[in-house]
Length: 460
Image (tube, rainbow, N blue to C red; front, side, top):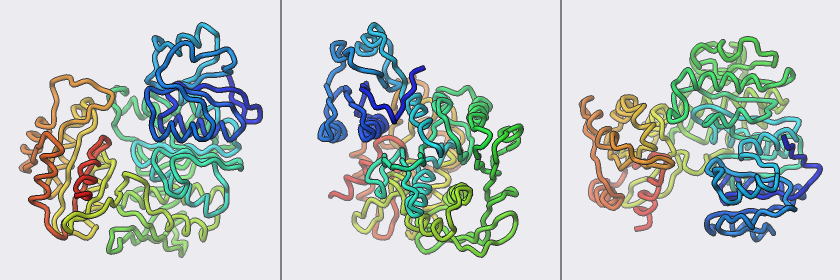
């Protein structure tokens, strides 16, 4: 297989260069002296930015765009063999790799390649670790799945041997990686359009742990059921963290300030360390996320003073319990939560946030997830004080005709809770303007475009 060597720059072509991850890695290779070309379906702010950096981009994918001077090609999972550029590359014998393979190839160039995985919390935890490494002046290269103010986007190109990236399990992408260190936050049933069931997902994460070398390290949540399944037989160092079960790193006296931000006493090997940790993000789930990065940061020799400063400086990423603004005295929060576990964590965080009444607008994400986890969605959403459902955001799927937000509404009703279904964002906005009052809290929730509702209300 072709191996990317950052010490030997050449010419690379990105099919679908306008994607957030693809564009970030195009920039990374460019900064390392590579000549970068690419294509996308249309212009965007991202592609215009890449062009301003000197990258040649064509719009519309055509076979003539692929020329013999290209040394290797990177493509997204959305590109198939019938794509004209893909087919042309095959004819010319140019090495090709899917995006996840490319990320793995880049990781091989770093002594400390850290992959942060888990069904939930990857972006937040990657961002937490980023803040700590920046505070400790470790000059890391970063790839994060959200927009992080500290690095001015989703990618940071450092000059050290430290590389930090999210490691996503969907389509087994992270099995293409070459990590020397891993964090596993949790392992729950999700992406059931790809995985058969929870056992299939657990098997994937187990394979991920087996990618670690003997001198590597795994930081894993001790609250994951049957933890030994993942850790037994590993030759690398294993560090545990957790809130419930016995772990090397734990938290005591967890409390929350007037904005729901976590404060706790750090426990190491069952004993208080004397360190009080102040977080600038809300929710108990972020206490667990913080423990994971504390564990890994201590492994790398970072002082507790730097760790505490880094954690306190992290105020969140885009679309993760993000305060968007206010309308008629109502605070608007947007959150990416689209899985029952994430929803529960967000609602718990909201309970501790100052408000009179809580309104939750939930947009289900994908038909397959909604159908597979229907009862779990109903259970957690029934805990919301006032709940509004919008239509399912299809994402990569087509409507199968046997699942809808009305199905979810009926399931919630069976639990004795009323949910309001409104088919258009305009109807949702009108309803909220009429019913929300000064001092209320509105959360727009989901991985689709539900964020637009809050943004529109704020702009009025």
